[in-house]
Image (tube, rainbow, N blue to C red; front, top):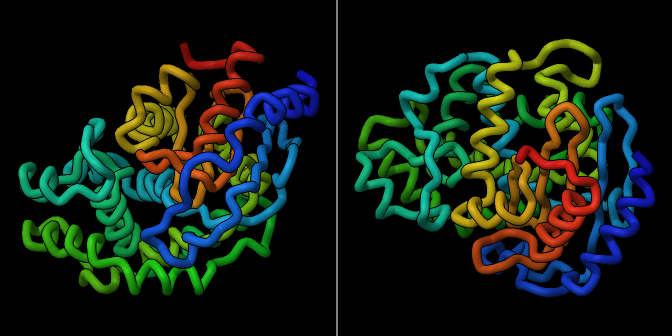
Length: 303
């Protein structure tokens, strides 16, 4: 596969969508980002990586971090997490309080905000430092020790995180958090603030295409758990647009309101695309268009 030629054609196809949409205005540190950015990278299962556009420009990974949090908890704790969080699409906004109360403090899946807070809570119990554990993992798997938190983004999220605090306190009221709410929120905001490039994220997520084998050849997850992470990414990874994403792209994917999307072609490669203009559901407009073009050009999808 000539990845460079494919990516250049994908970038040309997606170009009319670059600049469309809106930034994540509810996070002030992201509200003023230039909507003209676009980058895309492909990491092959052999470890090689190819990119186009702004593929080496760091951006705030935001909810893309949730896929890694889920993998880290499953690797350390197995199946026990599923007693505290479901595996079904939400059908409502990613920060819905109504659904959470209706379901007695059990989040619908680990990728909506409430579910990610439960995952962070469990990772905190398992490691003693959830956010740093994730950062260390991402540095190692991306091969980039310069991957870091963005204090400005973390502070901005913390100062405007009332909705997430409400979700956390509601779950604590149902007994679904083990650690103090301020601790869980703090680690959640820090992990969302991690800054990475398309190159970094594509490489860091490669274990999801290699049935759980990391960049150094060691096994990070059993193959059965990789199947489960990818399945939840497919059905729940793009908020309440997962059905449309599966229809257009046909791959497991996890998006973030920083404009990034990580996608997996099992057995072949991982993809990361970034463009900060978001649609009404919080997914990158140009990013979805680019992944749609990639799977259409290559014929690679899980369907």
